[in-house]
Length: 132
Image (cartoon, rainbow, N blue to C red; front, top):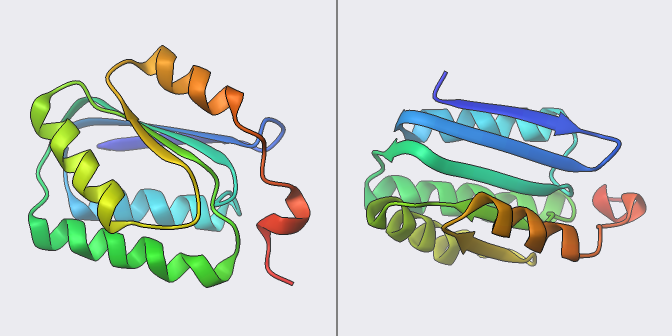
């Protein structure tokens, strides 16, 4: 599977690791998994250091629209994307611009810096995480 993820409810953290060719369907499956786990408000790391992103501009726009569609469903937690190649970094920047939501999002070249940043942010309270 190109994207594998774990959800830690006690720490309210989602860690996803992408490997190989990364396509739209892979990211959509990941998003479905996060939604199913009721973890959209959790802090997230999306590690693309071992992935080769294969997303067109149209597919990135589709992902952006999907993220924006989640906004009425509840708070979204901060997202740290780790991208080491220039291509993956550029695609992560485009995604961040298109997936505008009321949450912190930052792109890193190193995993430990991403984790340090996430750990420095306040957690989204559980009562804010789910709509009324």
